[in-house]
Length: 438
Image (cartoon, rainbow, N blue to C red):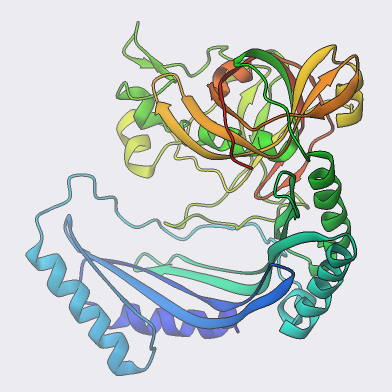
Protein backbone atom coordinates (compact mmCIF):
# COMPACT_ATOMS: atom_id res chain seq x y z
CA UNK A 1 0.00 0.00 0.00
CA UNK A 2 1.87 3.03 -1.24
CA UNK A 3 1.08 6.53 -2.42
CA UNK A 4 1.94 7.53 -5.97
CA UNK A 5 4.46 10.28 -6.64
CA UNK A 6 1.62 12.68 -7.46
CA UNK A 7 -0.25 11.87 -4.24
CA UNK A 8 2.87 12.19 -2.08
CA UNK A 9 3.85 15.49 -3.68
CA UNK A 10 0.37 16.97 -3.16
CA UNK A 11 0.43 16.16 0.58
CA UNK A 12 3.94 17.55 1.04
CA UNK A 13 3.26 20.75 -0.88
CA UNK A 14 0.08 21.38 1.11
CA UNK A 15 1.95 20.79 4.36
CA UNK A 16 4.70 23.26 3.43
CA UNK A 17 2.11 25.89 2.47
CA UNK A 18 0.80 25.90 6.05
CA UNK A 19 4.16 26.79 7.61
CA UNK A 20 5.25 30.24 8.79
CA UNK A 21 8.73 29.03 9.77
CA UNK A 22 11.92 30.16 8.04
CA UNK A 23 12.56 26.61 6.83
CA UNK A 24 10.77 23.30 6.57
CA UNK A 25 11.78 19.77 5.60
CA UNK A 26 9.14 17.03 5.46
CA UNK A 27 9.55 13.31 4.87
CA UNK A 28 6.55 11.12 4.02
CA UNK A 29 6.93 7.34 4.18
CA UNK A 30 4.58 4.40 3.98
CA UNK A 31 4.02 0.89 2.79
CA UNK A 32 2.96 -2.59 3.74
CA UNK A 33 4.76 -5.61 5.14
CA UNK A 34 3.75 -9.25 5.36
CA UNK A 35 5.62 -11.42 7.85
CA UNK A 36 5.29 -15.16 8.49
CA UNK A 37 7.12 -17.01 11.24
CA UNK A 38 7.61 -20.73 11.82
CA UNK A 39 9.18 -22.63 14.74
CA UNK A 40 9.36 -26.23 15.94
CA UNK A 41 8.23 -27.39 12.49
CA UNK A 42 4.96 -25.43 12.51
CA UNK A 43 3.65 -22.06 11.38
CA UNK A 44 3.37 -19.85 14.47
CA UNK A 45 2.59 -16.35 13.28
CA UNK A 46 1.41 -14.30 10.33
CA UNK A 47 1.30 -10.51 10.44
CA UNK A 48 0.35 -7.94 7.82
CA UNK A 49 1.19 -4.35 8.65
CA UNK A 50 0.30 -1.23 6.68
CA UNK A 51 0.75 2.42 7.48
CA UNK A 52 2.08 5.89 6.77
CA UNK A 53 4.21 8.39 8.64
CA UNK A 54 4.84 12.08 7.98
CA UNK A 55 7.76 13.72 9.78
CA UNK A 56 7.71 17.52 9.91
CA UNK A 57 10.89 19.51 10.67
CA UNK A 58 10.86 23.31 10.90
CA UNK A 59 13.37 25.99 11.88
CA UNK A 60 13.30 29.62 12.95
CA UNK A 61 16.90 30.62 12.39
CA UNK A 62 18.77 27.77 14.08
CA UNK A 63 15.95 26.86 16.46
CA UNK A 64 14.47 23.54 15.34
CA UNK A 65 11.29 21.64 16.08
CA UNK A 66 9.64 18.51 14.75
CA UNK A 67 6.44 16.49 14.91
CA UNK A 68 5.11 13.29 13.36
CA UNK A 69 1.61 12.30 12.20
CA UNK A 70 -0.03 9.48 10.27
CA UNK A 71 -3.19 11.27 9.12
CA UNK A 72 -3.17 13.69 6.19
CA UNK A 73 -6.43 15.64 6.33
CA UNK A 74 -6.09 19.43 6.44
CA UNK A 75 -6.63 19.67 10.20
CA UNK A 76 -3.95 17.04 10.91
CA UNK A 77 -1.44 18.70 8.57
CA UNK A 78 -2.03 22.13 10.14
CA UNK A 79 -1.78 20.65 13.62
CA UNK A 80 1.55 18.97 12.85
CA UNK A 81 3.00 22.22 11.53
CA UNK A 82 1.75 24.16 14.55
CA UNK A 83 3.25 21.66 17.02
CA UNK A 84 6.63 21.64 15.26
CA UNK A 85 6.71 25.45 15.16
CA UNK A 86 5.75 25.72 18.84
CA UNK A 87 8.56 23.35 19.79
CA UNK A 88 11.07 25.24 17.65
CA UNK A 89 10.25 28.55 19.37
CA UNK A 90 10.86 26.98 22.79
CA UNK A 91 14.14 25.19 22.11
CA UNK A 92 17.64 26.74 22.11
CA UNK A 93 19.44 27.21 18.80
CA UNK A 94 21.18 24.19 17.33
CA UNK A 95 24.79 25.23 16.58
CA UNK A 96 25.03 22.48 13.96
CA UNK A 97 21.85 23.43 12.11
CA UNK A 98 22.09 23.16 8.33
CA UNK A 99 19.70 24.94 5.94
CA UNK A 100 17.55 22.82 3.61
CA UNK A 101 19.06 21.76 0.30
CA UNK A 102 17.90 23.43 -2.91
CA UNK A 103 16.25 21.32 -5.61
CA UNK A 104 18.37 18.27 -6.53
CA UNK A 105 18.62 15.89 -9.47
CA UNK A 106 18.16 12.23 -8.55
CA UNK A 107 18.97 9.03 -10.41
CA UNK A 108 15.97 6.95 -11.41
CA UNK A 109 16.27 3.60 -9.65
CA UNK A 110 13.65 1.03 -10.63
CA UNK A 111 13.37 -0.99 -7.43
CA UNK A 112 9.63 -1.71 -7.37
CA UNK A 113 8.38 -5.10 -8.58
CA UNK A 114 4.61 -5.72 -8.34
CA UNK A 115 4.98 -9.49 -7.99
CA UNK A 116 6.87 -8.93 -4.73
CA UNK A 117 4.19 -6.64 -3.31
CA UNK A 118 1.40 -9.04 -4.35
CA UNK A 119 2.98 -12.16 -2.80
CA UNK A 120 0.54 -13.06 -0.03
CA UNK A 121 0.39 -15.05 3.21
CA UNK A 122 -0.82 -18.21 1.45
CA UNK A 123 2.14 -17.96 -0.96
CA UNK A 124 4.55 -17.64 1.95
CA UNK A 125 2.87 -20.51 3.81
CA UNK A 126 3.21 -22.85 0.82
CA UNK A 127 6.97 -22.28 0.67
CA UNK A 128 7.34 -22.64 4.43
CA UNK A 129 5.37 -25.90 4.36
CA UNK A 130 7.87 -27.42 1.90
CA UNK A 131 10.71 -26.62 4.29
CA UNK A 132 8.83 -28.03 7.30
CA UNK A 133 7.96 -31.25 5.45
CA UNK A 134 11.58 -31.77 4.41
CA UNK A 135 12.77 -31.33 8.00
CA UNK A 136 10.01 -33.61 9.32
CA UNK A 137 11.19 -36.35 6.96
CA UNK A 138 14.77 -35.95 8.18
CA UNK A 139 13.73 -35.69 11.85
CA UNK A 140 15.22 -32.22 12.16
CA UNK A 141 13.89 -29.12 13.92
CA UNK A 142 13.39 -25.96 11.89
CA UNK A 143 12.44 -22.33 12.48
CA UNK A 144 12.55 -19.16 10.45
CA UNK A 145 10.80 -16.23 8.82
CA UNK A 146 9.50 -15.19 5.40
CA UNK A 147 8.63 -11.55 4.69
CA UNK A 148 7.79 -9.28 1.77
CA UNK A 149 6.37 -5.85 1.21
CA UNK A 150 6.55 -2.50 -0.50
CA UNK A 151 7.27 1.05 0.53
CA UNK A 152 7.86 4.59 -0.62
CA UNK A 153 9.59 7.75 0.55
CA UNK A 154 8.72 11.29 -0.45
CA UNK A 155 10.83 14.25 0.66
CA UNK A 156 10.21 17.97 0.15
CA UNK A 157 11.38 21.25 1.64
CA UNK A 158 10.72 24.97 1.57
CA UNK A 159 13.59 25.52 -0.90
CA UNK A 160 11.78 23.62 -3.66
CA UNK A 161 13.41 20.21 -3.24
CA UNK A 162 11.26 17.16 -3.98
CA UNK A 163 12.17 13.51 -4.28
CA UNK A 164 10.18 10.30 -4.51
CA UNK A 165 11.20 6.66 -4.53
CA UNK A 166 9.28 3.41 -4.26
CA UNK A 167 10.63 -0.09 -3.76
CA UNK A 168 9.78 -3.65 -2.82
CA UNK A 169 11.72 -5.98 -0.56
CA UNK A 170 11.60 -9.57 0.63
CA UNK A 171 13.60 -12.01 2.69
CA UNK A 172 13.70 -15.60 3.94
CA UNK A 173 15.63 -17.04 6.87
CA UNK A 174 15.78 -20.67 8.02
CA UNK A 175 17.50 -22.32 10.97
CA UNK A 176 17.79 -26.09 11.41
CA UNK A 177 18.84 -28.10 14.46
CA UNK A 178 19.35 -31.78 15.05
CA UNK A 179 17.12 -33.62 17.54
CA UNK A 180 20.02 -34.02 19.97
CA UNK A 181 20.58 -30.21 19.79
CA UNK A 182 24.27 -30.57 18.98
CA UNK A 183 24.06 -29.65 15.30
CA UNK A 184 22.90 -26.32 13.89
CA UNK A 185 22.70 -24.70 10.47
CA UNK A 186 21.29 -21.46 9.11
CA UNK A 187 20.84 -19.83 5.72
CA UNK A 188 19.10 -16.68 4.60
CA UNK A 189 18.44 -14.12 1.92
CA UNK A 190 17.50 -10.57 2.88
CA UNK A 191 16.88 -7.20 1.27
CA UNK A 192 15.98 -8.76 -2.06
CA UNK A 193 13.79 -6.69 -4.38
CA UNK A 194 12.31 -9.51 -6.48
CA UNK A 195 10.35 -12.32 -4.86
CA UNK A 196 11.58 -14.63 -7.61
CA UNK A 197 15.13 -14.23 -6.29
CA UNK A 198 14.15 -15.87 -2.98
CA UNK A 199 14.83 -19.62 -3.02
CA UNK A 200 13.54 -21.20 0.22
CA UNK A 201 14.16 -24.86 -0.66
CA UNK A 202 17.86 -24.47 -1.60
CA UNK A 203 18.39 -22.32 1.49
CA UNK A 204 16.78 -25.00 3.64
CA UNK A 205 18.96 -27.66 2.01
CA UNK A 206 22.05 -25.64 2.90
CA UNK A 207 20.92 -25.22 6.52
CA UNK A 208 20.09 -28.94 6.76
CA UNK A 209 23.46 -29.97 5.38
CA UNK A 210 25.30 -27.73 7.85
CA UNK A 211 23.20 -28.92 10.80
CA UNK A 212 23.86 -32.58 10.02
CA UNK A 213 27.59 -31.97 9.49
CA UNK A 214 27.95 -30.05 12.77
CA UNK A 215 26.63 -32.82 15.07
CA UNK A 216 28.77 -33.79 18.07
CA UNK A 217 31.44 -31.06 17.86
CA UNK A 218 34.95 -31.32 19.30
CA UNK A 219 36.57 -28.58 21.42
CA UNK A 220 39.46 -26.64 19.90
CA UNK A 221 42.06 -24.79 21.96
CA UNK A 222 42.13 -20.98 21.81
CA UNK A 223 44.85 -19.39 19.68
CA UNK A 224 45.58 -17.67 16.39
CA UNK A 225 44.25 -19.67 13.44
CA UNK A 226 43.90 -19.55 9.71
CA UNK A 227 40.18 -19.09 9.09
CA UNK A 228 37.88 -19.44 6.12
CA UNK A 229 34.97 -17.04 6.55
CA UNK A 230 31.89 -17.57 4.42
CA UNK A 231 30.37 -14.38 2.93
CA UNK A 232 27.71 -14.22 5.67
CA UNK A 233 30.34 -14.34 8.42
CA UNK A 234 32.42 -11.79 6.57
CA UNK A 235 29.52 -9.34 6.31
CA UNK A 236 28.58 -9.76 9.98
CA UNK A 237 32.06 -8.61 11.03
CA UNK A 238 32.52 -6.17 8.14
CA UNK A 239 29.54 -4.10 9.32
CA UNK A 240 31.64 -2.87 12.24
CA UNK A 241 34.20 -1.49 9.81
CA UNK A 242 31.44 0.49 8.10
CA UNK A 243 30.44 2.06 11.42
CA UNK A 244 33.95 3.50 11.64
CA UNK A 245 34.02 5.41 8.34
CA UNK A 246 32.78 8.66 9.91
CA UNK A 247 35.10 11.57 9.12
CA UNK A 248 33.98 13.40 12.25
CA UNK A 249 34.86 10.50 14.54
CA UNK A 250 38.25 10.26 12.84
CA UNK A 251 38.93 14.00 13.04
CA UNK A 252 37.93 14.11 16.70
CA UNK A 253 40.27 11.25 17.65
CA UNK A 254 37.55 8.67 18.33
CA UNK A 255 38.22 6.22 15.50
CA UNK A 256 40.63 3.71 14.04
CA UNK A 257 40.90 6.24 11.20
CA UNK A 258 42.22 8.96 13.54
CA UNK A 259 45.81 9.98 12.81
CA UNK A 260 47.23 10.73 16.23
CA UNK A 261 50.49 12.04 14.77
CA UNK A 262 48.83 14.85 12.84
CA UNK A 263 45.60 15.25 14.80
CA UNK A 264 43.63 14.59 11.62
CA UNK A 265 42.44 11.47 9.85
CA UNK A 266 43.99 8.75 7.70
CA UNK A 267 42.39 9.76 4.41
CA UNK A 268 44.84 8.85 1.65
CA UNK A 269 46.78 6.40 3.81
CA UNK A 270 47.18 2.67 3.12
CA UNK A 271 45.85 0.83 6.17
CA UNK A 272 44.49 -2.37 4.58
CA UNK A 273 45.94 -5.06 2.37
CA UNK A 274 46.63 -4.42 -1.31
CA UNK A 275 43.77 -6.76 -2.23
CA UNK A 276 41.08 -4.68 -0.46
CA UNK A 277 38.75 -2.42 -2.47
CA UNK A 278 35.42 -1.26 -1.03
CA UNK A 279 32.85 0.95 -2.76
CA UNK A 280 29.17 1.91 -2.89
CA UNK A 281 26.93 1.79 -5.97
CA UNK A 282 23.34 3.00 -5.61
CA UNK A 283 22.23 1.52 -8.94
CA UNK A 284 23.94 -1.87 -8.61
CA UNK A 285 21.42 -4.34 -10.11
CA UNK A 286 21.65 -6.73 -7.15
CA UNK A 287 21.21 -4.01 -4.53
CA UNK A 288 19.03 -1.24 -6.02
CA UNK A 289 19.39 1.34 -3.29
CA UNK A 290 17.52 4.61 -2.87
CA UNK A 291 18.35 7.72 -4.93
CA UNK A 292 18.64 10.05 -1.91
CA UNK A 293 19.51 10.09 1.76
CA UNK A 294 17.47 11.26 4.73
CA UNK A 295 18.10 14.97 4.15
CA UNK A 296 17.69 14.78 0.37
CA UNK A 297 21.34 14.40 -0.62
CA UNK A 298 21.60 12.48 -3.91
CA UNK A 299 23.11 9.01 -3.66
CA UNK A 300 26.25 8.56 -5.72
CA UNK A 301 28.84 5.92 -6.40
CA UNK A 302 31.79 6.22 -4.04
CA UNK A 303 35.05 4.31 -3.64
CA UNK A 304 35.86 4.12 0.07
CA UNK A 305 38.98 1.98 -0.09
CA UNK A 306 41.07 1.23 -3.19
CA UNK A 307 43.88 -1.33 -3.03
CA UNK A 308 44.11 -0.79 0.71
CA UNK A 309 44.17 3.03 0.56
CA UNK A 310 41.40 5.06 2.26
CA UNK A 311 39.92 7.16 -0.54
CA UNK A 312 36.82 8.64 1.10
CA UNK A 313 35.21 9.06 4.50
CA UNK A 314 31.57 9.64 5.39
CA UNK A 315 30.83 13.35 5.88
CA UNK A 316 27.58 14.74 7.23
CA UNK A 317 26.51 18.04 5.70
CA UNK A 318 27.58 19.90 8.83
CA UNK A 319 31.01 18.30 9.10
CA UNK A 320 31.60 18.60 5.36
CA UNK A 321 30.88 22.34 5.49
CA UNK A 322 33.16 22.74 8.51
CA UNK A 323 36.03 20.89 6.79
CA UNK A 324 35.48 22.18 3.25
CA UNK A 325 34.51 18.76 1.89
CA UNK A 326 31.64 17.33 -0.12
CA UNK A 327 29.05 15.51 2.03
CA UNK A 328 29.08 11.76 1.44
CA UNK A 329 27.06 8.78 2.58
CA UNK A 330 26.60 5.17 1.57
CA UNK A 331 23.40 3.32 0.71
CA UNK A 332 25.20 -0.03 0.32
CA UNK A 333 28.67 -1.57 0.26
CA UNK A 334 30.53 -3.77 -2.19
CA UNK A 335 33.84 -5.45 -1.46
CA UNK A 336 35.75 -6.79 -4.42
CA UNK A 337 36.86 -10.41 -4.20
CA UNK A 338 38.68 -13.12 -6.11
CA UNK A 339 37.63 -15.95 -8.38
CA UNK A 340 37.78 -18.88 -5.94
CA UNK A 341 35.01 -20.91 -4.29
CA UNK A 342 34.72 -21.78 -0.61
CA UNK A 343 35.53 -25.38 -1.57
CA UNK A 344 38.76 -24.22 -3.21
CA UNK A 345 39.73 -22.22 -0.13
CA UNK A 346 39.18 -25.33 1.98
CA UNK A 347 41.26 -27.44 -0.40
CA UNK A 348 44.06 -24.85 -0.19
CA UNK A 349 44.21 -24.98 3.64
CA UNK A 350 46.61 -27.22 5.59
CA UNK A 351 45.12 -26.41 8.98
CA UNK A 352 42.36 -23.96 9.76
CA UNK A 353 38.79 -23.30 10.80
CA UNK A 354 35.76 -22.85 8.55
CA UNK A 355 33.28 -20.31 9.98
CA UNK A 356 29.71 -20.17 8.66
CA UNK A 357 28.55 -17.11 10.60
CA UNK A 358 29.01 -14.96 13.72
CA UNK A 359 26.63 -13.52 16.28
CA UNK A 360 26.60 -11.46 19.50
CA UNK A 361 29.35 -9.27 18.09
CA UNK A 362 30.23 -6.31 20.29
CA UNK A 363 32.70 -3.47 19.89
CA UNK A 364 35.51 -3.59 22.45
CA UNK A 365 37.65 -0.63 21.35
CA UNK A 366 36.62 1.80 18.57
CA UNK A 367 40.17 3.16 18.42
CA UNK A 368 41.41 -0.02 16.77
CA UNK A 369 38.00 -1.54 15.94
CA UNK A 370 38.61 -4.55 18.19
CA UNK A 371 35.45 -6.69 18.30
CA UNK A 372 34.41 -9.81 20.16
CA UNK A 373 31.72 -12.34 19.32
CA UNK A 374 30.87 -15.99 18.81
CA UNK A 375 30.80 -18.33 15.85
CA UNK A 376 27.49 -20.06 15.14
CA UNK A 377 25.59 -22.47 12.89
CA UNK A 378 28.46 -24.57 11.64
CA UNK A 379 32.13 -24.26 12.66
CA UNK A 380 34.54 -26.90 11.31
CA UNK A 381 38.14 -27.99 11.61
CA UNK A 382 39.92 -28.13 8.24
CA UNK A 383 43.10 -30.14 7.74
CA UNK A 384 44.95 -31.35 4.64
CA UNK A 385 42.47 -29.55 2.40
CA UNK A 386 39.35 -31.24 3.82
CA UNK A 387 36.73 -30.64 6.50
CA UNK A 388 37.69 -33.15 9.20
CA UNK A 389 35.06 -32.64 11.92
CA UNK A 390 32.82 -30.01 13.55
CA UNK A 391 34.19 -28.02 16.47
CA UNK A 392 32.53 -26.21 19.36
CA UNK A 393 31.65 -22.61 18.77
CA UNK A 394 34.43 -20.25 19.79
CA UNK A 395 34.73 -16.67 20.95
CA UNK A 396 36.91 -14.42 18.84
CA UNK A 397 38.72 -11.18 19.69
CA UNK A 398 39.70 -9.56 16.42
CA UNK A 399 39.61 -6.29 14.51
CA UNK A 400 38.24 -6.07 10.96
CA UNK A 401 41.25 -3.83 10.27
CA UNK A 402 43.62 -6.68 11.14
CA UNK A 403 41.48 -9.15 9.21
CA UNK A 404 41.62 -6.99 6.08
CA UNK A 405 45.41 -7.00 6.30
CA UNK A 406 45.64 -10.79 6.63
CA UNK A 407 43.47 -11.99 3.74
CA UNK A 408 45.24 -14.45 1.45
CA UNK A 409 42.50 -15.46 -0.98
CA UNK A 410 38.87 -14.57 -1.70
CA UNK A 411 35.84 -16.08 -3.37
CA UNK A 412 33.71 -14.40 -5.97
CA UNK A 413 31.57 -11.80 -4.16
CA UNK A 414 27.90 -12.55 -3.61
CA UNK A 415 24.92 -10.61 -2.27
CA UNK A 416 24.59 -10.65 1.50
CA UNK A 417 21.88 -8.37 2.89
CA UNK A 418 22.55 -4.78 1.82
CA UNK A 419 25.99 -5.55 0.39
CA UNK A 420 28.12 -7.63 -1.92
CA UNK A 421 30.74 -9.63 -0.04
CA UNK A 422 33.28 -12.40 -0.78
CA UNK A 423 34.23 -15.30 1.40
CA UNK A 424 37.87 -15.08 2.54
CA UNK A 425 40.81 -17.09 3.76
CA UNK A 426 42.86 -15.17 6.33
CA UNK A 427 45.68 -15.98 8.76
CA UNK A 428 46.24 -15.12 12.43
CA UNK A 429 42.58 -14.77 13.42
CA UNK A 430 42.43 -14.73 17.23
CA UNK A 431 40.10 -17.18 19.01
CA UNK A 432 40.05 -16.55 22.74
CA UNK A 433 37.85 -19.25 24.31
CA UNK A 434 35.59 -22.23 23.66
CA UNK A 435 31.81 -21.94 24.02
CA UNK A 436 29.30 -24.69 24.76
CA UNK A 437 26.57 -22.70 23.00
CA UNK A 438 25.04 -24.29 19.89
